[in-house]
Amino acid sequence: MNQTDPIASARALGGAFAGLLDAPTRIAGALAGAMTRTACGPCEVPPPCWEPRAAGTCCLELSPGSTGTIRVHIVNCGWTPQIYIVTALGKLAGLLTFAPTTIVLGPQESGTVLVTVHVPNGLKIGQRLTAPLIVRGCLNHFARIDIRVSDCTRCSCCDIVIDDCQDHIHHWYDHFYCPRPCQNLRGSTTGNVAGR
Image 1: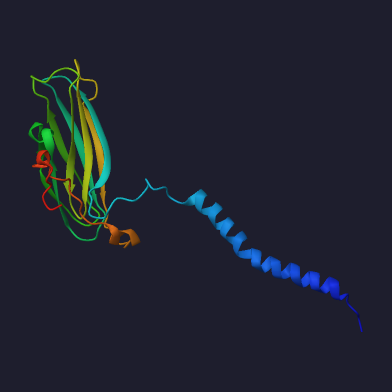
Image 2: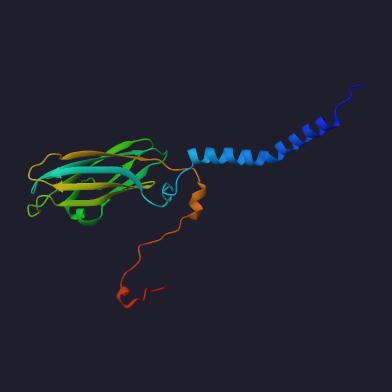
């Protein structure tokens, strides 16, 4: 029969017990290190599901009285026919013409809408016009149009690609978004904000 030293056994048992007590601290430290390497920062919250999806920026540099062209290439990624409507918002709405304004694409089909930009003669050199171009289909998309008025035309054409694919994934963060429109500032001079 082997005899063991009771003091050595007590030390071994105490060391094992101390290791068990220290394990949660080591695991938490390892997880915190992994989270700091992979976690998203507070500024990287994904956009809400109801917000139009960004399709990039189209920059044009046009002279007064000239025209530019924006080619909007739309792809229907779905398996049902889809109607697409292209419009513009803001100051650019009156400067743009669409050919066509509405197209119907079958499953997996693609089509192109030509948008012509007409720069009025009265615009000043150096003036900038920026507004969104909206494409409504299965989902809503937008592209930022940035027009710089220059003494001569340097960039008169750009392409925008819209992949209109339905998002079948229900994300956890979809539940935390609610519409928060801009506040109406009327009556703010009196210090009274309606509904607050």
